[in-house]
Amino acid sequence: MPAESALRDRDSAHYELIETLRWECGAGFLRGERHVARMRASADALEFAWTDGAAEAALANAVATAESEMLRVRLTLDGSGAAQCTTAPFQPLPADRVWNAKIAQARLASNDPLLRHKTSRRAAYDAARAEYPTGEADEVLLLNERGEMCEGTITSLFLDMGDGGALLTPALDCGLLAGVLRGWLIETGKAREEILTTAELTRAKSIFLGNSLRGLIPARLA
Image (cartoon, rainbow, N blue to C red; front, side, top):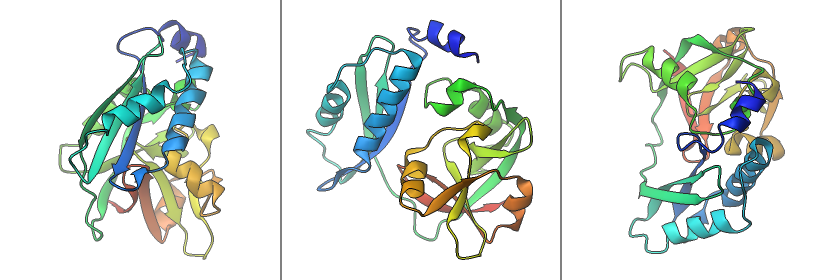
């Protein structure tokens, strides 16, 4: 979608910025500052109203009376700058769980500006999910119009090529979300950007899918 169309629709009730965070009793929000910073950057880029402290206040209120040890917290921001949160108990995946990944036929457009931001506009990701029956794939990976790997519908992609180097993750210019976990791994030297294709995907020693909520998840190409 052209950037000007995204800006025109920013006040729609069906168009919001989203952050999904993990909260742990005693530890607080994992990478919470990074999530808020990403939401603010998206608000600036897409001309959503922003009030300093509003997102932090919504997050604090959401967990003020938490009864679970871990929570999945969904923070949203609408075009007027209103921040809201919903919560649900969260259970991490078992340590030995391996996700089955499939590749979508649908393609992402590398020049779509909204792909860099986490919003409620998820038609492309929903369409990719719908290509496979429920239970056949834990995650579906998307490529762009040039055949370059981009991301999963809810995760960033990471490849261990078995050379002892950093994990490889698709470059933002390919058309994908600047994931919070992805950014942290790059900044700490644990991952680096590279243009990747299905050739690297099939040649990788190990495949990982990840987001800030669940961390890195081992995966296999089903």
